[in-house]
Length: 154
Image (tube, rainbow, N blue to C red; front, side, top):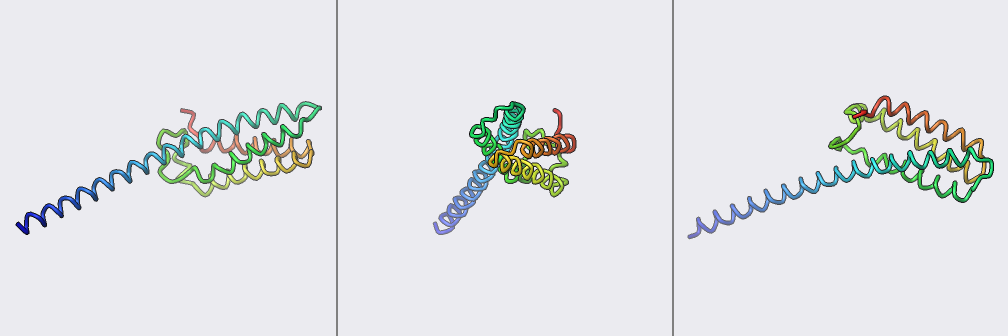
């Protein structure tokens, strides 16, 4: 009887351990999928927000409050990207493997883009349209360069 009880305890422990490992792996995969979705959403919003700001800065009658609101959102989206490119999050991603193979170079490009957006945001807060336009122009150049290096077209 003792051996049977001992075997049942071992089987129960192994089953629990296996199920816990499966659940952990599932949660990890779900988090990676969520990270990909969040960064794709952030990039889409950044694209829209850049275009809105560019159009508003082309107008001579600046709505500084609206520009500041959009710029603040854009800056937050940009800052979020550093934490959303985690290892093994290539699943269903348009990012090239190069993002992870040359991760320091990629993170430096993200930081450069983010810095340009921060400069643009500061210029908008100071209602300096020329500085805001220049910072936005620099951010756009960084985006194009990064896309050529790190983003797959399909």
